[in-house]
Image 1 (spheres, rainbow, N blue to C red):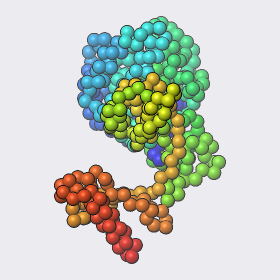
Image 2: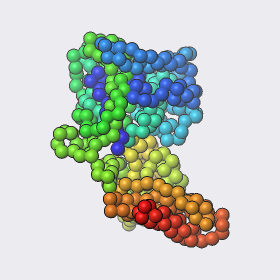
Image 3: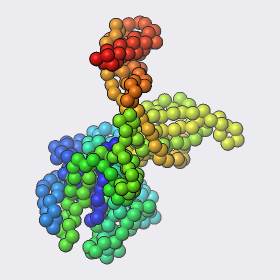
Length: 409
């Protein structure tokens, strides 16, 4: 499992997270291309700076023209109209909505009427979409983070001078391990808070990992302590949820890999069954690993369905949004599970009907299972006008023949 560990000893903000991801290998060209597809009037500057002798990447995003409005519906429409992958757009929409909901809660205002003030303009859209895209580009399966330094004292906001953490930040950090360090002022911004609370799946010490790179992002200020956020990128060795790496954690065996996944499920008894295939397709397109629709008998004897979704932890927010938008449910259960998966590889075999990819699961004793790609076999069966089971069997025989030759060699 590929993980990223966020060291938040100097708090977190959108620009610090962007800088850290760029320092860890995401490219400036990819960020600029993303901004172009977002279609917003901003200017971006990326450079190397020092914060108390610590080298870091500084990202500055500036609006090049005054925003027409900072109302949440306007910013949500900008995001909806952007040329982004559906999964990325859905994830970003969920994060933006949580940011707006925090402001709405503070002012007891309907979310549609919220003005985000300094919490968000198109620059904040860039921070949100950029961080989500950077995490994806680095192929990080999970993000883990240290306790977060909030800063202390007072912060200047569009609503006046307020105590640290600012009200919007306070509304977003429930359940997050936090503390007040020695630096005066605000270290955790609302954008940083909403991104951490949306992406981080565990808080605590740096887990045992095979380290590849460390990316360091710089904040705007340069206080006496280095104002940086670091991301450690690498491969988890053993279970990343082991809080003390010295407690006997070991790397997964060659035969299997351990994965932490999330399950989202909801029980539905009032939805048109014709909608389930559409919902399933939307969930799979958004990153779900599997979707199951299970017949169930609900309260009062009503027939219904249990909709269960298996997904990587970082896809929970996006998939939750799809379930609320596309079904009649009012709530979703979410819990974490462990999965042991056999080592697998993919080979292509030649049959009398054409080339078929076959997935092979194996351990030290040899091959455990073979599974020809179903869609490819179905396409070949339709093309040649033969039964599908005949194509599947031909692919299976071809794969077994290849493995037999490899075993003898």
